[in-house]
Length: 259
Image 1 (spheres, rainbow, N blue to C red):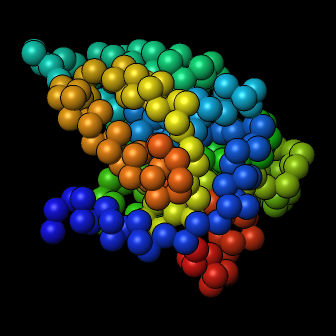
Image 2 (image 1 turned 90 degrees about the vertical axis):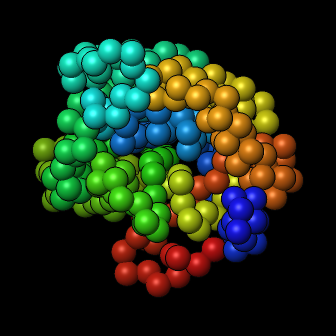
Image 3 (image 1 turned 180 degrees about the horizontal axis):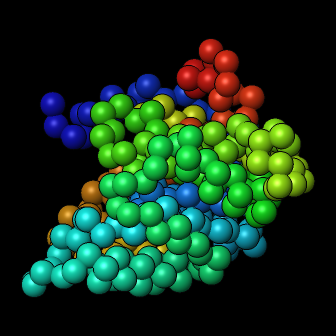
């Protein structure tokens, strides 16, 4: 079975919810938590660029420094230098998307702490920023082996859940209800949003990470093909897919995995 056939089978299983798509399109304060530089561009660059364009405020949090995954080098570099390169590339990528509010937590690549520890950083950011939408990668993606992705995704989910619990981290005031949660790179998304007008900025932001993608034509072809397939399924030219959940759906809710 080739990738085209596998993608068709993936799309056939989707159950989309237009009301949840509207929630994403109307979000005014968005915080996106990325495991590494480049992850948020790949899964949500089009959506975030479109949100900025319509006037939403977007904050991006980069969890680790990506010092272990430098793939396009002609001579060996020290890890601190690699981390510096990755940070510069991320700043450039965010500039392409129109995002100025960028925070680096600078955990060491491959050593992002488990979510029970990471949640404190995320909850601090979430309560001070007060978003109506929190976005990250889906920690339940089958066969995902990278601990940074798993811990980041689960840490954000726990921060969304605990956001409205005033006795958890009592020094941080709870000012609002928990944000809606959007998980990218999900095996069971329930929303596809159009990125027809922002697909080029998404691609340009990904190409800013030159150290990661020596074969730039291939990464652009792969991501454009996926975006095209998602868009076509939902009636657009290009799309990005997310699993959108309310805070009451991430604790003792057997229906959360449906649709």
